[in-house]
Image (cartoon, rainbow, N blue to C red; front, side, top):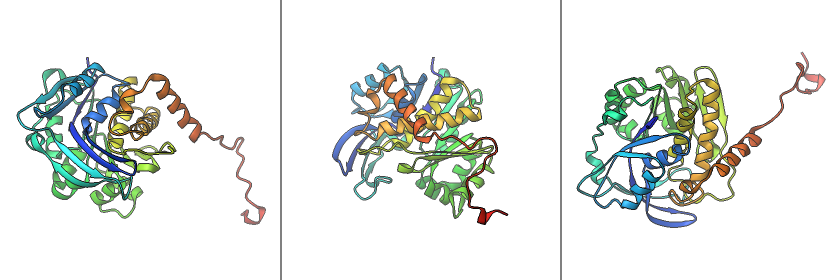
Length: 318
């Protein structure tokens, strides 16, 4: 029985990166999220695909224990996106978007999905995200959502209303400042927390992520990879690791959220090592544990003990 529900997109992507080009790779927010979180918890996906959707791609998801009963196939073509990272690996330049069947996506939850305790509203129209939340028969223990600049531009009132109903918002630096009209990330996070969020996760690409919580602030770096092949799906893989961990331990406390941010960074670091899902879908427990331990060592230091202060020169003593 799933413990987590994700509602979002399943797509075919074509990307151009400094490492080369790759066409028609399986992608989409719900896909990356479900594969990443599926290592940690039982997840169900609600999305729409067209008749051109490869049966092997559905099998890849279901063979991993992902509940695809909500992955609806309809007449038409699957959502397709094309982008380039040639200028900046932290942000894609969209070359072409073909919404296809995704243009009429109106998610409807089955009875088995309406009471799941963890819910991720991936990056889709905030009106649709709100409709999914309204279909839940029991308010989930944790509701997280993602968004993007498009919805801030064209659907701000609906997005603000949604943010006021969820627990955690995942958003990048530029979008956080755009949404709040703040002139800095910390100020933007404060304004978002004032809207009722429990926490805001600010995604910073190659610089990691910062969790601004009502009770603490926690920063996690990105893993120092020698080569980044394809950043597509890194944010959704982060979200998958983050929510997947919380679901797996059934804990939404402060310490769990800190660890979840590290697990999110672990999964994102694997996602960018190859085109599409190639690396992310081929992991094993040993690799994931080793990467988590590497993050621990990356951020470990010993605080000063016994009330000892830093050895500031006596000239500056008050």
